[in-house]
Length: 259
Image (cartoon, rainbow, N blue to C red; front, top):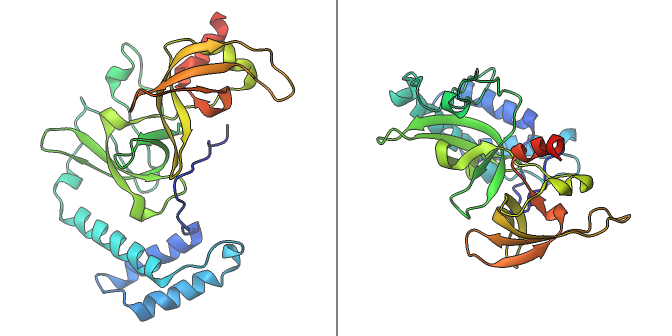
């Protein structure tokens, strides 16, 4: 299933080849400063690359910001004892490996069962900036607070490193919600939690909501025409929406066999 669209203000972004190039520059440079001349030269190389055809040109300030942030992050990891300590077996793990990054869920999430391999799963995280949920691209680092709470540094799909955010694992990271097919509207029940696409004057985002009422309608060539009365969690306002604006927790998919 394709990733649902994100409507937050887009970042021009770097291609995989550009990121690899900057990573190599970091390895060769050590702790040197990346001045304007160097960054302008590198930005020029990127902007004239065939891989950037149809994409915005790269500004030298974007290159400098990315290099400086990554350099600081690397130095912080090297100097931090927290980054090197082993993760406890009894809490959520976020073991980030350079060659094979994998997100580990706590064993108590699967009582009496073997913890499954989650390397192929997709995740979403709730941003503390606007309270909305965004698809996770990469867990780039992890740490433990003094309280013992685990946090991960999240990079969101479609955003650059300057948008990276520390997120509480227990409260704001979960398996990615999914959109339902038209015929799957029968799975939705009153009281279900959902992510609803809410579009305002200044932003558009996926936020938590609850299904209050379902108005069954005949489907037509356009697909499901059922109406769902939802109430947003953050402000308790209500709205009537179609199925295409809703995403649900993966557990709802298991209801098909019960219907």
